[in-house]
Image (cartoon, rainbow, N blue to C red; front, side, top):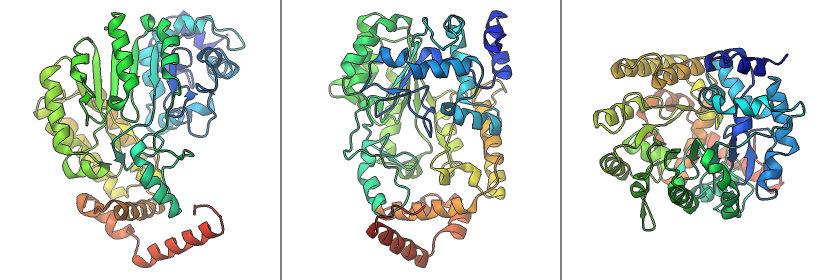
Length: 454
């Protein structure tokens, strides 16, 4: 008897599949995710401490897709056994009741059923095929978001190198160049995947910043050429660019019937310009107005990364854009930050957790959305997540010290930009003596090749 196949045979609802499984995820059968350094994982959250399934630059797509690592994972998940790649989802389910695995089951379980049912005991799945693509062609990006790093932003390279010298968390990679090409021969991979395009349900473009990537435009033009313009095209974009070389993105979007652009926007105004360094807020709003005017069929949502720095102001951003008519009240989905750990909202002192939760719930009341809507679920999930772990004062000290160093590098004053965090700044900001001590110790470690302080 097999729990997963039994659920499929009885035509169980996705709700039942979610409630009755611990690790099953359809993406092991119908999703291809390639990172900015060519590594293949079950999904964008499937990295962490887990080993990659393969590397698209060293192995062919076919060798990876039908290879021993994918077989091993499919076999385990088919038996509803937990795998290390999915640790983030397991943690979120335990602490908040919702995860990306649940979302995958809701959206992609139906198309995976036959693939799962024909899977053999050793994990061989002759019918498995990608119907959902997420290929990060490179780390090219024009911003240095505080919670990001060189692995996802070429612009971060300089600051990362400087932070390495100070022996603190530096968002670094092993690459000695700013631009990391996820796929060395992207044309060859896209040619190989062309046979799957007629079966494709969704293509997700992220980065880096996808609107800066030439391969993204090549793929859209290929879909237009093949008349496959009903595929769901989805983005995670910072909305800082609407034209690449001579191509206006809105001109391409006009060909597609189902486009969703999630704006990687965390807050507004000077706060946005600090949190996502190199943002020009007036340009973001100009681009939003352009998209709304020229491609009204394109759905734009807000997809902020929920963290300490934007917890108080993210709802005000949503309110402003709803009032302008740029986003619908229910088009907001929060990505709950886990790393860097010092930005995690779980580190808020108890009174600030209560303060933030009240802001979020008041905003829900203003939106007037019902409990089945995504924005309702995402806010309640975030509250559960935030309250599931007690405040970690050492993390707050780490955040303040890191913020102080980054402010010095970038010529900013984060404390003035985020006055709502006054309690944290006043109680955990490092004194001058601590800064000097840490700097001296970092130099000593560097001199004796001891590596960065932990």
